[in-house]
Amino acid sequence: MTVRILFFASLRERAGRKEMSLEVEPGTTAATLLDRLRRDVPAMAGAGRISLAVNEEYCEPDQTLHDGDEIALIPPVSGGR
Amino acid sequence: MTVRILFFASLRERAGRKEMSLEVEPGTTAATLLDRLRRDVPAMAGAGRISLAVNEEYCEPDQTLHDGDEIALIPPVSGGR
Amino acid sequence: MIRLTDEPIRIDDLMSATADPAAGATVVFVGMTRDNNEGRSVERLEYEAYPGMAEKELERIAEEASQRWPIARVAIVHRTGVVPIGEASVAIAASSGHRGDAFDAARFTIDRLKEVVPIWKKEFFEGGAVWIGDQKGEEGVWKNEGGDAPSE
Amino acid sequence: MIRLTDEPIRIDDLMSATADPAAGATVVFVGMTRDNNEGRSVERLEYEAYPGMAEKELERIAEEASQRWPIARVAIVHRTGVVPIGEASVAIAASSGHRGDAFDAARFTIDRLKEVVPIWKKEFFEGGAVWIGDQKGEEGVWKNEGGDAPSE
Image (cartoon, rainbow over all chains, first blue to last red):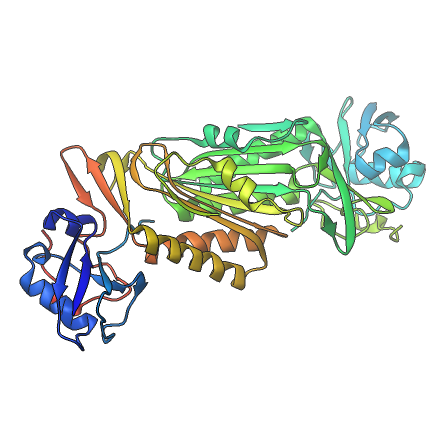
């Protein structure tokens, strides 16, 4: 099955693009996907803490992905005092 | 000596005027003046808590008044939550 | 900017007055006439000030806020006369490097203003009018305890 | 009013959006680009959003504020793209019957926004640029603990 990965901010700049498609095994969880991306995608090297959102909602690490899901990689948000 | 008394809000309405002049003994304190006003000035009958300001500054009860002082009678200010 | 005015208050004026390149946060408080109070249907409010002293007290509060918090600028505008429903009677702005200080300074400023600044509010409601604070045994800055009279 | 925009934010729009005859108090928070940060001389900020999700999260925060405090209305506007020094990147307004609730709701809204809404800030300073939060071990909503890498 195929999911769409969105890059933002520093990740988008490192990747040099806003998104990519990725084939994943059925049953893949958010955590598994993130581990794989950290290992395989050069833009993810050196990236710090990242949260994931699936279809515009923050997700838990054990959430199972589905075909066509939109996965956003979310670096720390702007914060500030 | 003479002092000027200013009325505001409910006191002004009751008195039907904004100010009056009053002859007072040298050595009169703010507290003494307020007691006298409560006794002698009809507009002061039924007035609740009142603070005094002398020459645009809140004063202590024992402050001594001087000739020409501007004494403001200050009902509770607008407050509100 | 410390100002009494009988014209409508423009929030943009307070934003301009507190603008500062070192400020990352501005908190604005706006107090408005609302259509109800303690179960009464309010028609309008009318504010009366002791102008010279009110401005002095406002300056003092702004100064105190500036000493207590690292704020860039403070602006206070209070309207006098009739203030219709939905319009602002008072607006305060405090700018600071960071938002915590701006919130705290704005909160302090309006709380203190309501306690000490000689400005009075008359509420016109359906069937009557009343000077707010006049009947209650509210704490004045200095009160003549012996002179309390029954509520009217 | 919940809005992302790449135009300058107008505070009057938030005042209009939160106007309510039953509201006696409105608190507005405005976050602006300041000319310095952690000792650096800042030239400008640039904000990037995940638009659909950012709006959903803003709606959720406004809803949560409305449930926690008896507030009349909440408005949130966040700017994206370049925000020059002194201009607003975010503005929040909360109106309520009384000021305590308006202050608390506005404070909650901006604090929560800064924690969860997917909007990122790039700081351009004298001699470089950096995505804020990128190098620190800041708490994400969910973080992959094993994947932490040294700061760049």
